[in-house]
Length: 233
Figure 1 (cartoon, rainbow, N blue to C red):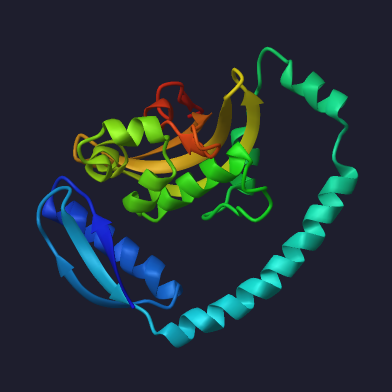
Figure 2: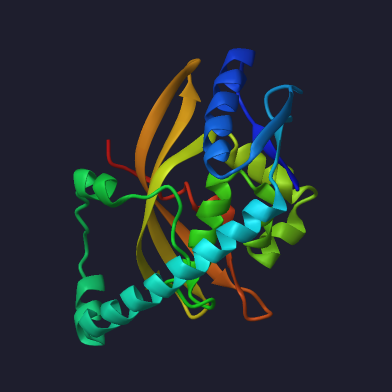
């Protein structure tokens, strides 16, 4: 099975550096690098392939991990605070973030199995994982219907916003209801980007509006992610 991964960068050197990072990442996942196609800043891509036997082997490992996660979830439910305590915490006017603690607990891929599928956190976590994987087609599927239907090319629209930012680590934070059909879901995201031809790193809180669609599903409003960004550097 083959998979194309977008490679973005202003210069050829930046794209080649990004290619090396992507090759290292996907080799750990069992993929084999096939070739690289350079078509400029936003249209270059690398092609990888993986043996289906490796995928099946990985799925067996996933089942074991999933069972372990179920045990952890049960423990978390037992020790979780009451609704009153949670409401009391959410009513605080300001939240102070500990950058060191956030970075120590951040992960490369968010675990979505700990959420119900109708939980706005589940949708935002999958959206962030797709961004980390540079899978813009999956990101589009996780946006609000209203946004995607207004775009002539929703995949390219997301690339224009997200392709020059590369996630290094992240951690899901809180979720607060904002109106009857929307939630404000926050996550800590450490990402790199290019500024003045140099790579920089931002440690940010990215609150996203996750809105219920007419069909009852939730979707991320992709433009909201950076509007209320809180930089912790």
